[in-house]
Image (cartoon, rainbow, N blue to C red; front, side, top):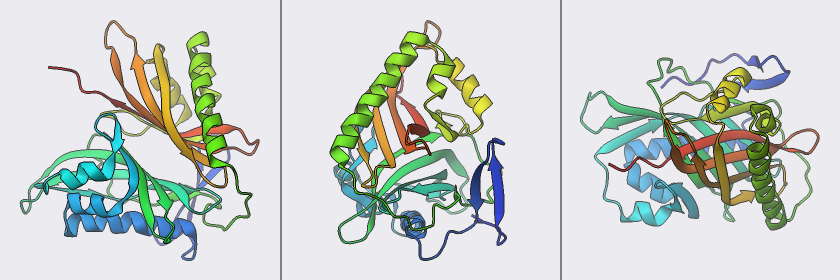
Length: 296
């Protein structure tokens, strides 16, 4: 895949003054090293096979969804090599102030190992990366959705302005912060259930948020997010676990959800990446629903 233009493009998203860089980050930054870890992971999936790439790049306690959350390395270690190749490329990335916790997301393409065979599926991946004690980046959580074919393969890397700048931060108690955030996630559900309005949910969504739904492209415009949420008025979710960066400014949660609908009831698992805004409030920047396949 082509990657990015050489010029630096400043994009204004949603017209709300939230700027993203569409260029390579500073070569000495933690963000750049995380991106390169993602790209190395993708290359290994092509050169050594998908199974070996996941076994090598997942952390010991990494979470994947099959369809519910499970420890990922044992699952991949027990799998036989796949007659399948996956190609992917990071498109949007961000990193915590601590420089050891971030996320990467972008399009993926599923191919047969037969030469010149057409793609057999498309999707989007979302990965949480954490830096290990030895300085290596490993995937702490991996989830994805199916999506239509992406016509534009000129993938440019985007990240929030300043994400590749080293920051001074105060160490936080990650367990305390995690407990607090899980409680906040649950509180959001109670507030949404009580009010049954999109506005109640949007108060917790960052302007730059991206929403992922099965079979669709990611939604990243506020009006489109409103429309998406309006179709799921009766959704209930319950957090299971999560993690918070050492700097306390980025985190994730995941859990189960259920959509009560006479026409199309659904249940499955959700994943959210959170980031503190300039008022220190947690806001959702990534929201994923991964439905459990219906029983046949």
